[in-house]
Amino acid sequence: MNIYVGNLPYSVTDDELRSAFAEFGDVATAKIIMDRYSGRSKGFGFVEMDNDSEAEEAIKSLDSTDMQGRKLRVNQAKPRADRPQHDSRY
Image (cartoon, rainbow, N blue to C red; front, top):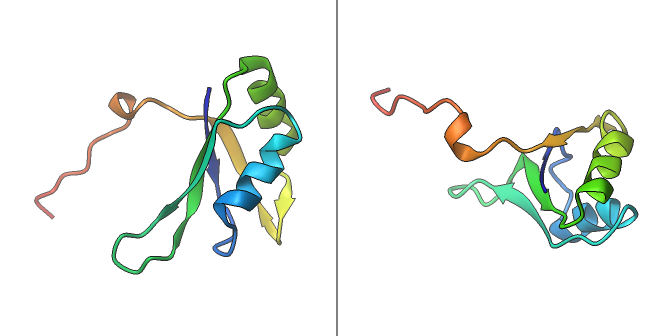
């Protein structure tokens, strides 16, 4: 299951994100999304867990919890096709 993690502190690393979710099971990948121009964190990331029940437990347990003073938003990631497209004319 692909998990969206939002409102991350900008200082959190991929390894710290992986560690937070590893308490609930095996983490296949953990990736903080970085701004391509500045190289800084965008404040969100994605975690992939192969076991859906472990992923659901992680979502329930970590959503709305505090990480370095920020309240996390954690939920199942939506497929790219389900998200609205940006109008590139602006």
